[in-house]
Amino acid sequence: MALTEVSSNRCFGGWQKVFSHESATVGCTMKFGVYLPPQAEENRVPVIYWLSGLTCTEANFIEKSGAQRYAAKHGIILVNPDTSPRGLNIPGDSDSWDFGVGAGFYLNATQEPWKKNYRMYDYITKELIDIVTSNFNIAEGRQSIMGHSMGGHGALIAALKNPSLFKSVSGFAAICNPIACPWGVKAFTGYLGPRETGRWEEWDATELVKRYRGPPLGILIDQGLGDQFLHQLNPKNLIEASRSSMHPAVEYRERDSYNHSYFYIASFIEDHIKFHLDHLI
Amino acid sequence: MALTEVSSNRCFGGWQKVFSHESATVGCTMKFGVYLPPQAEENRVPVIYWLSGLTCTEANFIEKSGAQRYAAKHGIILVNPDTSPRGLNIPGDSDSWDFGVGAGFYLNATQEPWKKNYRMYDYITKELIDIVTSNFNIAEGRQSIMGHSMGGHGALIAALKNPSLFKSVSGFAAICNPIACPWGVKAFTGYLGPRETGRWEEWDATELVKRYRGPPLGILIDQGLGDQFLHQLNPKNLIEASRSSMHPAVEYRERDSYNHSYFYIASFIEDHIKFHLDHLI
Image (cartoon, rainbow over all chains, first blue to last red; front, side):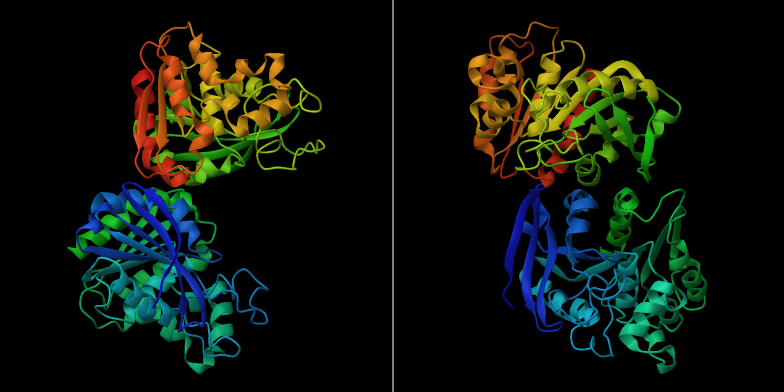
């Protein structure tokens, strides 16, 4: 799989790069960001994947999170993909900001006209991981995943559906129970069909956590209490659902006054990287 | 002078805010960012002004520099204004990205049709400082200034033309000798008239540094050696010109491979804040 370097910027002693490639999974050109810390020049290092929220491209996290500082300090590769296929011009894919382009919801669609291309789940958990593992200096098996909002949902389901693929998972203001909120109901209806199909529960972290039977998985849920979208996120549904199944317990951190923005993410991204490091060693 | 709060985001334990106000100096509504660290809730703290480069608004620094982390750590207020008047629709003000809107060059224009509104020098060094000093918890007289590219030029002339107004000044990839580069020649011709008027030297840091006779002023010039605009910046002209006049000497730091972007700024903004702190104590 050939990668094309789109940009390369020196940053905190390493390199912030963006690559594009032709994706067989989603059927279009996809871009992703990679931060390569100085340590990766000589040694294999752990990787943390970042999944972004609604409307984002690969640029938001790169430009606004400030995560490179901590990745350089701790010797971690960061990889952040786009949030949907692009450039396909599927009818209706750009009618709203919370469905279609920029809003792939990290699942595999089953409905027309989405099911051929809107396969972000397979893209992230298979194709992207293969590309990253074979092109960069990754320490085998030492990978974790995190995300924001829709990307927090994506990170959670990627980890819960694939026991032992990731050492740990964390979410900033994650959509923890999409079948119980307007964003999730709209997306799942469009991509998966009506709830009666029984398919929704396969892509909902609060449902998946109840039946998780894999090895111990570190889970951190982080939530700002000034978040304007709190009614979409339902972190406590996930915490409650996890009580019977998760060992160790899901770690839940509330942040007084913080909202849904990248100012919130920037403030606590180091905490998350440290959380993952504890599981990646 | 009434301030309107445009936005407010919790960030690193403090608040990143944007305010707007009617500016008497430039004759339009102006916006600026203020980061208020937790220390400023109870105590008066130093302030560092940031001046942005061509095409920027107040948003770029706020979203991309990551400076809030260090301002919170060290107890510093950060203030960053816009780069020009806006919304005036002066004929020609939006014809190019390096002149007019987004490109005020931090001087007072003398030519029509710019001289009434393009007075960013007075705006920064008088009106904005007055507003900030009277509205926020600033420790009197403890202020420094820094900037990027066109904003590095602005910071340098603001400090060199006003001995003792700022304790120190620093520039990232500053336009150090605008009368000797295409960006500066275009801007100065438009705003000040032809070079023969003798006005250009009043707004050029390399010229001003030769005649500086004020109290000791800390000056830090920071330059990435992979900067795609290095031919516009001429840091060594300033260093050379400063040899006869500056005590202590101008500090010059070169950064291997870094370019002109905010990835470069983010990598070294803490160094600059520490440099200013040494002068602000």
